[in-house]
Amino acid sequence: MTKIGFDFGTTNSTISFLLENSDGTYSLESFKIDAVEEAIDYIPSVIAYSANGSQQIGKIAKRNLNNRNIEAYENFKLDLGDNFDKVYEGKTKNKTPTQVTMDYINNLLRVYISNMSVSSLEEIVMTVPTAWYGKPEILNNIEYIYIELGYSNCVLKSEPEAAAAFFCHCYEEGKAKAYDGDILVIDYGGGTLDVV
Image 1: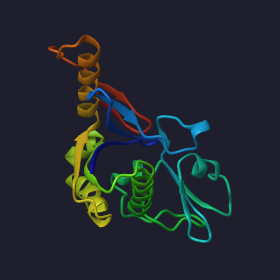
Image 2: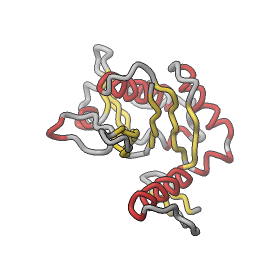
Image 3: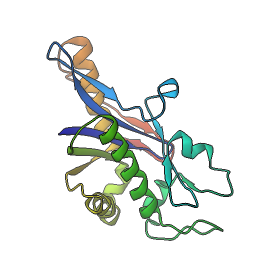
Image 4: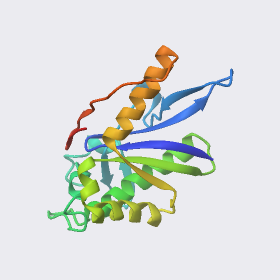
């Protein structure tokens, strides 16, 4: 079993986890989904559906954004706000932001579980924009997605809260002492801006 942090971004997403080192200490690592020669610490928040029903996420899906034979979605996180149950309009697009997000998360977690050879996920901490905390229907929808996928162990945290926790983690690692001060977080994301 394992615990992961999932930063679901408008443009890119990241899964982080603690890796136990041989000396008993832990290091914070990012999951790399793409081929080793192209591996980077983030995964494009893009999903593509082929005519045969197969689904691709990440860089491969991003390459197909302009392919007329493939139904591809990007920036769907933005539509999880007030439009999470509204069907996309277009020649081939016939899904809702909720369906697209569910498929993206499902594919990403399946690849993580397979590549990391873990039996299950003990806990998923997912970051969400602070603005969503004023709209319980959006948070309920995110929880619904995870429950439908079989993950009832998801905890939602605000993006600035997660950023502050990461800062404190890095500070403690670098200075060998806990941070004792105030923090101003400016989260300038692809679709939202949070200042806390």
